[in-house]
Length: 193
Ligand code: IMP
Image (cartoon, rainbow, N blue to C red; front, side, top):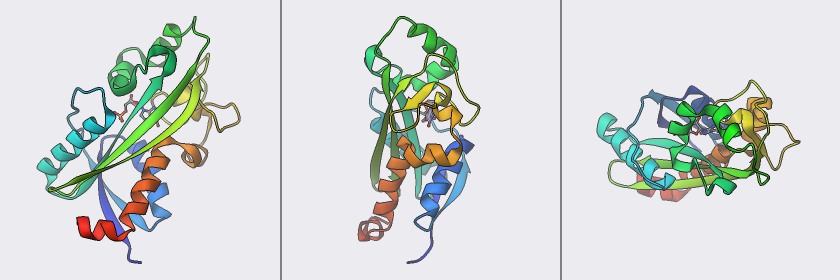
C-alpha cells in the first residue's frame, strides 16, 4: 500500500514523537503543525477534540488530526478529566498527590481522543489505559501526569519511569492511534477524503 502522510496539529512535541512511532508501523507518516488550538469548555473529551480539529481546519485548510487527552481519577469523580491541562498548570503533580493523600482508592485512567477533520466531516477514535495514582512523583520520562500514573499492565513503574517504547506499548494514545491507523488503511478513509 502507498505511504500516507497526515498533518498532526499540536503544541506538544512528545505527543508527536509518540504518534510517529505508532503510525509508522502502518506506513503512515506525520507532518507536525506546531500550533496551540483553542479548547472548548466541555465535560466531554470527544467534544473538545472535535472543536479543536474544526478550528485547526479553519486555520490551516488542510486535512489534519488533533489529539486531546485527560486523566480521570475515580475517587475524585473523574477529576481532572477534561480540565487536566488547567489542573496540571495550576496544581501540577504535587497538588494531585496532596489532594489524594488521605485516599485509599487510587484507581484512575487516561483517555485519549483523536479527531480527524477534512473540512467537511470529522471522525473520532478513543483509547484508554487503566492504572492508579502513585504516592510520590517517580521518573524523568514523558510529560504531564506521567510521573504519578502507574499503568495496570506494567510492572509497578510509573509512565515517568518508562522509556518511550515502554509507554507507547500500552498507552491510551497508542490505543486511539491504532484505531485511527486501522481506519486510515481501510477503504473508509479514501471515501472520506
Ligand atoms: P492535552 O491533551 O494536551 O490537553 O492534555 C491535557 C493534560 O493531560 C495536560 O496537562 C497533559 O500534560 C496531560 N496528559 C495528556 N496526555 C498525557 C500523557 O500521555 N501522560 C501524562 N499526562 C498527559
